[in-house]
Image (cartoon, rainbow, N blue to C red; front, side):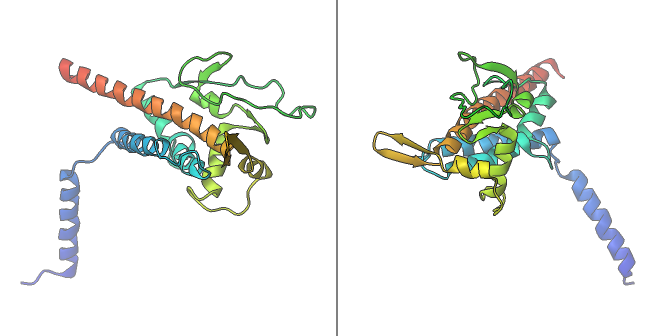
Length: 222
């Protein structure tokens, strides 16, 4: 007797359900840890590249920073993972400006963008606070969240956008001269570079902390 099409379809669905139950499914926390390990290797490779100071590398850094710190659709991987394992992420950056929109301000510039450890005149805050704290740049005040999102969304890291803000275009025009070498887009590279250094330290902290917690649970039978 030949089974009907409906019976075959039912058998296929049942078999697929059994297979899915047998397959190891990673938890969201495990998936985030996997993404962090991948980004640790990726960002180290970018930082150590011989042409890392050349114009354009800030784009790839911004793409990774968007995934880790400001992704609105799926959640910022680094921040969400830190919450899951109960590790607070602290960052030292510029003090919040008293009046970022002051019309009398002609020029402001923060030498320090981000640090993983205390530095002179640095302000300690959570990473969530930091992302909303305006940075002083040659193109005016801009929050790290907005800058990361705009660079990643318009400069080819995630999308290619043709409608870019005047502020971003001013930052892209920044040049830095070291000896006889002139680096294009150096201000963006400097900002993304300092943020990337902080992110690398944060990833190592989280992965180390989660490994230690897992070993402790195993030792106690938890």
